[in-house]
Amino acid sequence: MTAPPPRVSIAMTTFDGARYVEAQLESFASQSRLPDQLVVCDDGSRDDTMDRVRAFAARAPFAVHAEQNETHLETTPNFGKAVSLCDGDVIFLADQDDLWLPDKIESVVDVFSADPTVGAVFHNGRVVDESGRPVNYELWDSLWFSEAERKNVRTGRALEVFAKHVVAAGTTLAFRGRYRDLVLPFPDLHDCHDAWVSFLVTAVSGVRIVERNLIDYRLHGANQFGLQRFGLREQLDKARWQLDAGIFSHNVRFFRAARERLAAQTDPDRQPALATLDLIDAKIAHARARDAMSSRLLERLPTIAGEVRSRGYWRFSYGWKSVAQDVLLR
Image: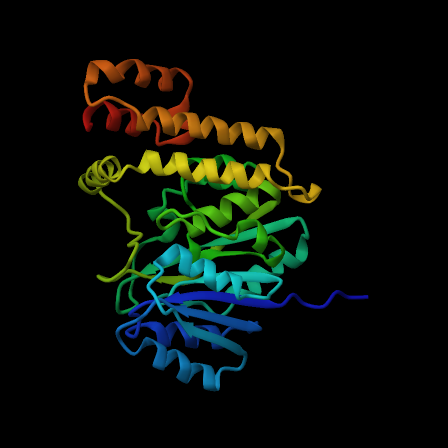
């Protein structure tokens, strides 16, 4: 007996997205495999985003649940709300200003259907400008998702990649609905929904990549997160921003929360391997060491030397670039 096709939900968040939201919604309706449910949670838009969403809902060829938050939640809790309202066997995450290529849902669902051990799937995307014209790089280029790291994902070492940095952008990510209660509630941390879902689900299941562009990622002046490819000057500016923003303290809190959530699992199918918990502990130790570094070079050199010897910079950061960040920019 053939198993029924999985129900597909899309969890989408919006905020002041009237300029592009209709094109994104129409790309959902143009899929070769339509979704079964679209959930839209608007975070108090001041423009007519919700009018456009409701107009689409009235003619959409699938169920649409749309609601506007009474108070502004910010991105991560708003995505948490949208995911909580999804009832699909597979849940896709969606931003308001991209375009899904017509075979995105079909291609991703095929991966889930072929292997029941796969808990999450993500893919590449074509980066376009605000008018939809392609620029000269792809989404994985902007995320520094190298061929070596792609090989690690293909060979079952995805968690090592995810412990280092985010490569599964939310707009390219889908996961099985049975893990919804594992990832919810999202932690009270800024802008972490995609990293949180991809890390937790991968810690207890398989993950696959589709090495094709299945979205047009629109880069424009109003992006909340403009995933663009940086030159040397931009990389230096971002390195300084990381220090100013306390990114390593954020990493400590993120991975502590992930470890607590995973360690609390009682379902045998969701209990992480000891090696997974050891990896998280090592990541926390590395992030804590970098967060606690002194502003005085001579005082932080022993810590830097220790992270070089332990290969922490290469396992959990960006190698010599991160060494240089700690030596020169603090």
